[in-house]
Length: 169
Image 1 (spheres, rainbow, N blue to C red):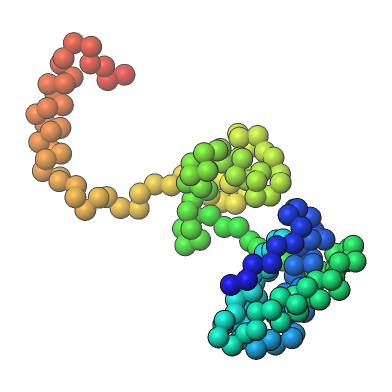
Image 2 (cartoon, one colour; image 1 turned 90 degrees about the vertical axis):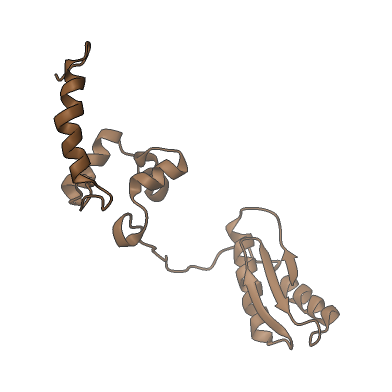
């Protein structure tokens, strides 16, 4: 693979150059080039070294890039909206994402949407506007031993209640 590194900057114009360079190189249909993958400020050119003249490929990349050097603006494109869903069939629950990221649920929402909510209001939105409920197990554990539980409640629980300091509130 040949890695083409453009200006090392987070700049929409640099990204536009990477995208256009990839497009122009694809249009050339160069022999042996398998794939062209633009990054934000890089371009990966995957090629077969047995079928590609590397020097000719490098010259083509330089010519195409030189033609884009004067680019100063980004082409207008329609926004691509990617929906974000949490929980159930859509992936991890919002709280699990927050725990994994080491932040609050409100912070996950802020990072995803750019909107900041007070933590107390987050639950209101989830419950009232989105219809979420507290998550509860839908069934009892298969491993649950009803006889052992019944025996513990009849024998051990009364002993614990009688111990000093035990409180049932």
